[in-house]
Image (cartoon, rainbow, N blue to C red; front, side):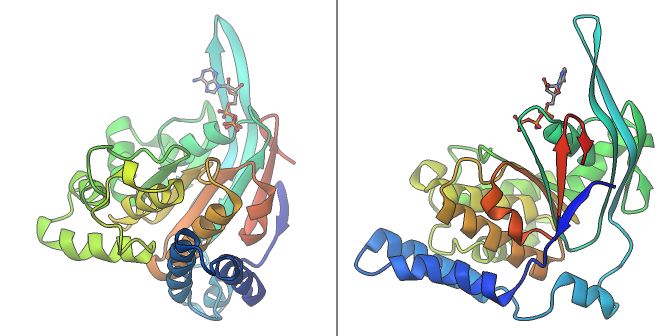
Length: 285
Ligand SMILES: Nc1ncnc2c1ncn2[C@@H]1O[C@H](COP(=O)(O)OP(=O)(O)OP(=O)(O)O)[C@@H](O)[C@H]1O
C-alpha cells in the first residue's frame, strides 16, 4: 500500500499556528479583522484534545474502514486506443480521518476521487463503501447512496449564483429529501459551523473565494453525509484562506463525524492530513 506518511492532524501547535497567523495580521485593517474574527470563531468549534485516533482507541469511533479500494484499475478508450489511467490502486479510509491524495497533474487523482464517489466505476477491482460493494451497484443504487451519504466539494465552489448562502445550503437538503421542517435549524447550524453566521444572506458574488468555499462546505455536509470528497478545494485560494478551509475540515470531522478524502497539489496543507497517498502515473508510491 502506498502510504507516504502519517501525521497527527490535530496537534495543539498546529491549531495555535492557524489561530495566530490571521489574528496577528488583523490590527487596524477591517478586512483582515473580519477574517481573523471568523477564523477565531471557527477555531472555537475544534474540540481540544481527542483526535480521531484517540477516540478510535477508546472505542468511540469504529475501527472499520469506511472505504476500501482493492486493485482498482481504470482504462479509457481514446480514439480507439486504450488509456490506462489507474493501474492497481489499494487504499483504506478510516472513519473521521482527513485523507489527502497528492500527485502531479494527470496522475489520476480526480479519476480515483470520481470512483470513490460513485460517479464512475472501475474497469477492474473493488470499492467497498461502508460495507457495501460500490463496484457492483447499478447506476440507480449508486446515485441513491451518493445523494444520501456522500458530499462533494469542487475547486470552483459550484454554487448557484443567484441563490444566497442560505438558499444554496437549503437546496442541498431539498435534493437529499430531508424533511422541510428540519431545514431551518440545519442550514443555520451548518453555516455557523463554517463561520458564516454573518454572511448567511449574501449571494456568491458578494462573498470572497474562501467564504464561497465555506458555503460549498456547508452545502456538502448539510444532509449529514458519512463521506466528504473534495477535489482541489484550496486550489483557488491564498495560503491564509486555505488554512481556514483546513480548519473548517478539522471542525466538521470532529463535530459532524464525517470522513474527508481530498486531492491537492498544495504541499503547505499536507501536514494536517491523517494520511497522505502520493500518486504517480496511476499508482501510489
Ligand atoms: N473520461 C476520460 N476519457 C479519457 N481520458 C481521461 C478521462 N478522464 C481522465 N482521463 C485522462 O486520465 C488522466 C488522469 O486525469 P485526472 O483528471 O484523473 O488527473 P489529475 O491527477 O486529477 O490531474 P489534475 O491535478 O490536473 O486535476 C489524464 O491524462 C486524463 O486525460
